[in-house]
Length: 89
Image 1: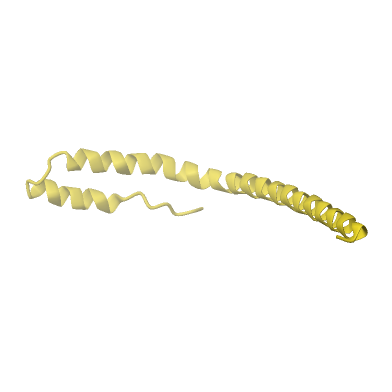
Image 2: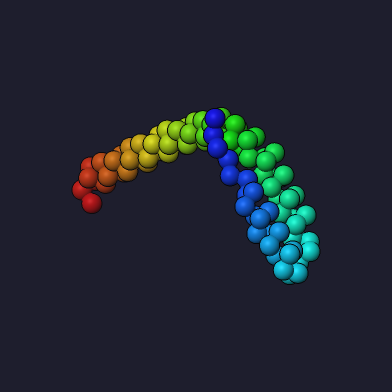
């Protein structure tokens, strides 16, 4: 199980700010923030591994495609050079 920081300390800081009379909306805002992170944090932690697998698979496919393109380009360059050498230019 992964530990997910949810920002509970922000409620303490917001409480101090509200008590000092700075911003009364800090309390509800920080509570909403912590609630949002309490819900989304575990969901994101659970879904990150499959997402990484998908990204790695796409990167691997892109790498193979790029390697094939480089190979084709290298073959074309060698062919052009061979034709150039045959003509004696």
